Every structure is written in structure tokens, then in C-alpha cells.
Length: 204
Image (cartoon, rainbow, N blue to C red):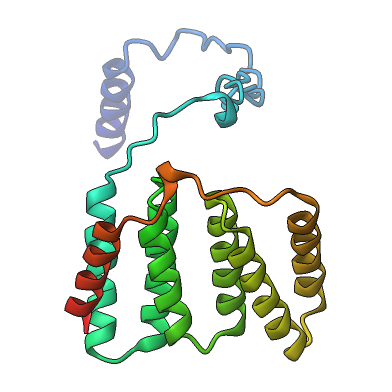
């Protein structure tokens, strides 16, 4: 009896798979994937031509009154706290500012104040040379020569050979040129000098 039951179960298990008699199809083996080749991209970006900034003309915006007020404010603060060396540099800067506008009286006055305060030999020499240049432009050749001679004594005392050579060149140029009379349109104005005196008095 057990034998018949075993045969019956085997027959039933074979019938449950309807495709047991079909032949299995073997497909061709897939090729191994090749290494992917990435496309080449130019990531350097477009080549931008170089621009010469020297060829670009920019208008110069300069507010004289604002610059003057800022310099006077700094000079006033340094004078108040007795930082005289820095104040001396402020006065030289003010003189340079006035020279840009041909205000020779004020430039001369502030250069003299700078020399009265400074202990810097280089600044003193630069102020004297600038004073000599102003007086030469005004036609005061004798006074210009006096400033140059004073500058030469100062340079010689401090062993500044390069400055001595420059001063000698300027003295020779003054001696070879004919003395000029003081040009009336460039005379020192008493009103301007009085205003400069009041400005400095307010700084102290």
C-alpha cells in the first residue's frame, strides 16, 4: 500500500510542472562592459583679452576744500596733543596742497611752520628746497639762493652727499640764470598771510 501511495505522489509532483519536458535555451554570454570614455570638456573657459589700464583715462575728482579741512583738522589735533613731528608733516602736506593751486603765500608760510617744528633732517631739507623753488618762481632769486645755501649747510653737516650734489646743481642754475624781478601777479598777499596766521593761531 505504501508503494502505491509513493507512486501516486511522484506522478502528481511531475504533473504540477507543465514545462518539465521543454528543453532549456542557453543564451550567449554577455560581453564584459568596457570602460566608459568620458567626453572632453574645455573647462578653462573663454580666453579674455588683457586690458591695459594705462589706456583708460579716468577723470580726476578732487575736492580741494574737503582735503584742506581734513588736513587742518589733523594738524589741529596733533598740535593740541603736542605731537609736533606729525604736525610738521601735516604742515608740509598743506603746503603741497596749496602749491597745486598756485597759492604760494600760504604754501610758503606752512613750510616755514613745518621747519620750525620738525627734527627730521630730510623733511627740513625738502621744505627748504620747496621754498627755494617757490621764491624762484616768484622772482626772488636772492632769497631762493639763501634757502639753498642753508639747505647745503644742513646737508653737509649730516653727510648727505646726494643732497649736496642736487643743491649744487640748483645753485649753479640760479647763478647762470638772470635775476628776475618779482612778478606782480604772484606777490605775497598780505590778506592771505594774515588768514594763514589766523589759521595757525587757531591750531595752537
